Amino acid sequence: MAAPIVFLGGLGLAVAVLFVLTRFGDTTTQGESVTIEFDGPCIDEALPLIEARAHQVGMPTTLVGRTMNTTLPDMENARVLIPKLLVTTGAFALQDAAGQTVFTNADIEDVAIDLDESGMPVTFIKLDAGARARAREMTDADELVPFVDGASFRPLTVASLNDDAEVELQSGAGMTADRMKRAADLAIVLEHGPLPCAIRAGAVTASQIPARP
Image (cartoon, rainbow, N blue to C red; front, side):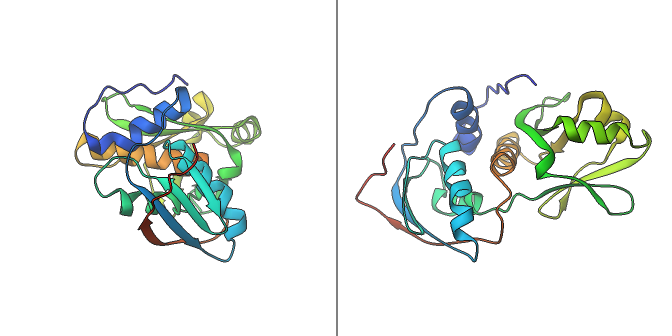
């Protein structure tokens, strides 16, 4: 899959731009320094994934127990949007017509954002070799529906999956900037997920100590 290259402006695209740069270059966020409290029954297992998501958007992090010291992206409402992104579960499922899950996060080889045929941002999931082998044993005409955290996306056929082993997740309606951010957010949580249980992001407070890069 080609590296996703998008020439779009505006603060609304900050997360999307950082997703691209942190995969194909080097960047560090330049917003407010804060501490974020996390909590949940599987917090020890979840924290490495949460930290990886933070790094994906260019955030330097220092973890002390369940507290992350970091620098937010310089974008509007970052105190709300970034913690929400970090604790999104990111559970992927590809289900058949009977509602049975046939592929999950364990079958993902790679994730990327790109533009579809109409020039709109989408998130692509590439399935691994084992999943591709199982797909070849299925009936080409069968329809599969992608889900992320229970939200459904446009169905695809097994035949289309066998063509390129890619699942396309549309970014919904609205302004291109909003769609770009949704596509990037999906890619981030799927690349570093799913979280093993529900995690809560608690207090976000200003910090006088910058996180280590």
